[in-house]
Length: 184
Image 1 (spheres, rainbow, N blue to C red):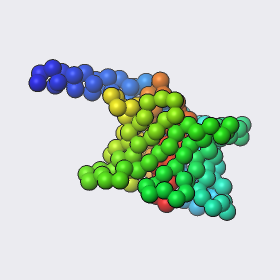
Image 2 (image 1 turned 90 degrees about the vertical axis):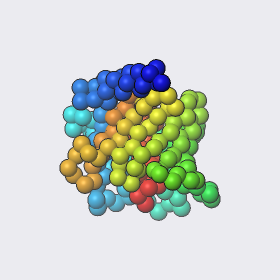
Image 3 (image 1 turned 90 degrees about the horizontal axis):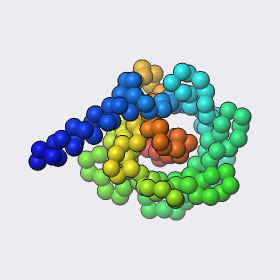
């Protein structure tokens, strides 16, 4: 019992080192335009510099977004999967290789849960209040990212903190996909 409490205390301390005020996590600000044609918006770093663009394509059979760098190069495609029982989206590399599939849990009585099946890495679990942009992304053992609206006063803005060892593009794309599925 004491070992378990000590382990939990140690885990919280490690999370503060990464996700705390002076932590080492990479921070992004996601700001969606309230009036945006084709769901285009920018992702900024913690200094307010634009780092990525999310480009929505209009007039498609299914929802499709492209995550681009500042030079306009497509980093990945986020696309709704048609004819699935649960809400499902896929993230594909520019080459067409499947990077991840995001699915909503069938039953989640207390809070929303999502899974991110990663092609060549550990699966991720998303849990928390997705509708209010207050959730964590875990790789099973530890928190690898945190999404929160509490850091901003603007209604259409939320923050994403990502552990330095993670793939920022993949985590940001998963966050965008969750946003699309939970806020159509």
